[in-house]
Length: 151
Image (cartoon, rainbow, N blue to C red; front, side, top):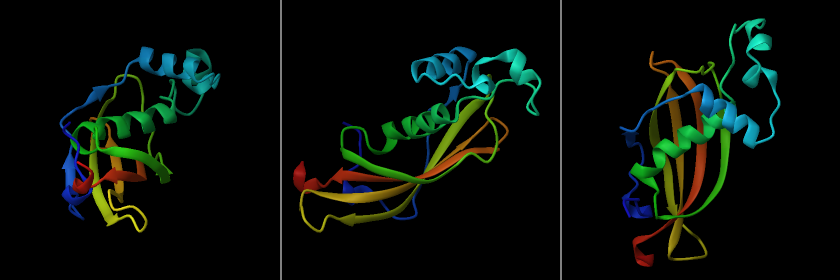
């Protein structure tokens, strides 16, 4: 697996993730339907055309999941024990169909577990931008990670 162990996370390091995704109408519709979210801002073009946005917004929980998902290959694939939480989640600008998302992740902190020697907790700040460089999502994620002692 390509994921990093606890000891590999350098505080302050910023990952510029090469993987990008252009969000489609189908992505947004499928996610909204699968999560039983009937919000017309996401699925009703007529309704959305009469809002200040003039078109459907991408479901913010899809945006959050995509942002974190893009980061996994470079950071935590195969070395995560559990996600402990996400905090400070913000969506400072809308995401629309056809926008291309790129993500960067900064290591905020990393510490060994106080009770188990085979793991520790890493805090990551994920930031997603559209193709114009506009910040569309941000969150801080706490993840329990394997240490090299567990390998």
